[in-house]
Image (cartoon, rainbow, N blue to C red; front, side, top):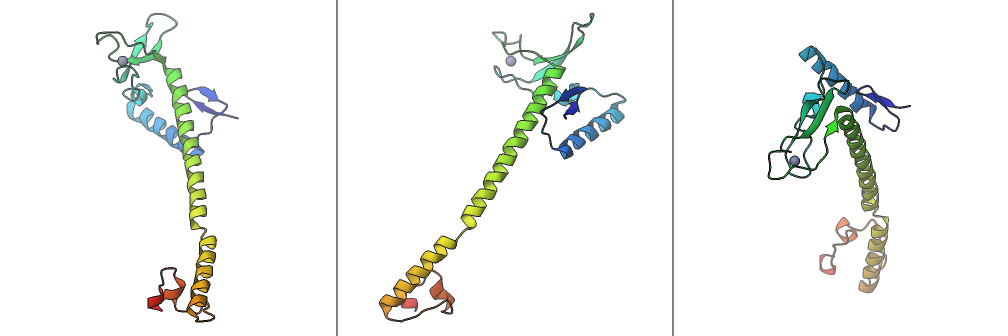
Length: 167
Ligand SMILES: [Zn+2]
């Protein structure tokens, strides 16, 4: 089982089906708007050169032979003092990287959510604090000679903030 992105089948995809549906809906919308679908606008100015920090742009490559295709490369590649050594990417490579990035994002997001749930569970578990509070209250009451203070005692005493002067 896998999903198809840009005509390519990805076997290890874990993209949320809802997000995939949204992407497909967006692709249909663009197709309807332009009369044709092109991935060019989707990725242009969304890839940054790791060397000079400029955006990648798209270019038609080998336009007269069977290798004709669109590639993405640093717009600034030949404009600086030295040529950027970052690689050019084919449209399919970009799509593949995009899918990996989305999957990585979703994985990290689910890990973060799992951690957040765990933190909430631990932080919300006040049983040991309440037990300590009960022990201290009992000790305080015993040393003050008040005998048996119970949970029916005024709430100001049951809150650990109670001091002897407030009793
Ligand atoms: Zn560059």
